[in-house]
Amino acid sequence: MIEPINITIKELEKQRIIYIRFRGSYVEFRRQSRKLFKELFDFAAKNNLISSDETKVLTIYDDNPFITEEVNLRTSVAMIIPANAKVVESGNVCVSSISGKFAVGHFEMSGNQYEEAWQYMYQEWLFKNKARIRDAVPFEMYITEPPKSLKDKSLTDIYIPIL
Image (cartoon, rainbow, N blue to C red; front, side, top):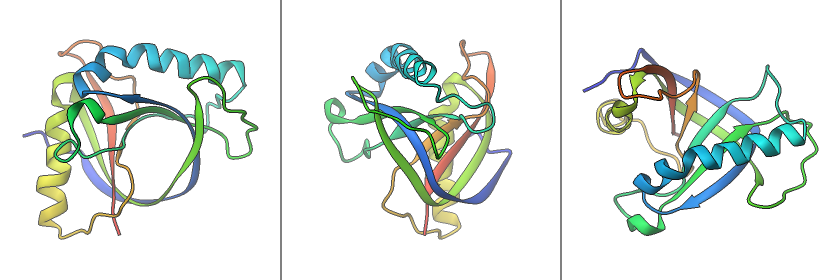
């Protein structure tokens, strides 16, 4: 099983995001994700929301795949935007924020190791450290661009909401 480079605890305070939500299986989400990210980036560029200091790209997992039927899973592509940015929602793009305490697993992994990394965070770290999960959404933050092939590696942080 893949292990993180390290795990840190991080408190986020009202990180403003724009996002586009997808409903369906994770397999179908992966097929559509490039198109969704392109739409999100086009909106952000058109509205001057991209800031080299603040912009980070995320995938947010709104539902638990062990509870929610695959066809109803909600997954969102998202981007952290400047706190003072003026945004008017349009089309598929919505505005929200992320706050709270998170355990952050810092991983260097290939495209086929994401599921293992999530399992590590929930099955190995969360339960062995007796951390308590908080009712909020977990997400991936891409530190470097996700791998385009299964051989390539990238840096990705997995955020698990905790109390």
